[in-house]
Every structure is written in structure tokens, then in C-alpha cells.
Image (cartoon, rainbow, N blue to C red; front, side, top):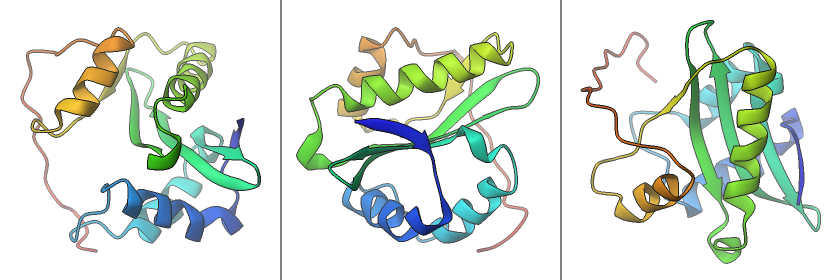
Length: 138
């Protein structure tokens, strides 16, 4: 798998991958999320390409205090082949390069499969409650 920054022509394939992985929610416009990320630290929006197709994604960012990762996705047909581990390792490398001391991420509490994946990468559950407020309605 070749890991590289997302390019604008990848957008449709990325949205299709997110849909196959169950990441798209009615209240989040995935195309708007892509456009927003392309305007802020686009080099931290990674795709994994295998045989000419987008097989993985990770949207990362660093605010100077913490790093975040969103939209980690691996094509269901390619899961359990190390693609998720590889793209997360690249996210971590890029964030360490920027001086990022800690990476945070959010997982839906009922997604036991994904929680197990992250625990296997060394991530632990922080004793915090995630709060959010929608500022722009998509």
C-alpha cells in the first residue's frame, strides 16, 4: 500500500470508502469535511492506495497541543492485512515530526471491533467525556 496525501480527484473514492466502512452520518456532509480539511493541514489527510484504488484513509491534525485523527478507514475487503496499522503509523510519524506529544481519537462506544484495533496499537481509554457543539449545519 502506498500512503500519500489526499488529492482532490480522490474525493469520490474516499467518500465511497467511508460509506462502505459505515463512517458517514446524516449530520456530517463527507464532501464538506474533505473540503474543510484540504484548507487546513492538507498534508495530514492521508490515503492508502493499493492497485490504483483507495484502500485506506486517515484525516489527522495538530493544534499545537494535541493531535487528532478522524476518518480512519480501511476497505472491508482489505481489513486485517495491516493497512490500518500502517496508515496509523504514518499519522503518528508525521505528528511526532511536528512535535505532537499526544494523539487523541474518538470511537463510538458500541464499536467494539474498532476499540479492539486501537487497543492493539497501544491506545488506552482516557477518562474524559467528549462534548460537541455544531457550529455549521451541513
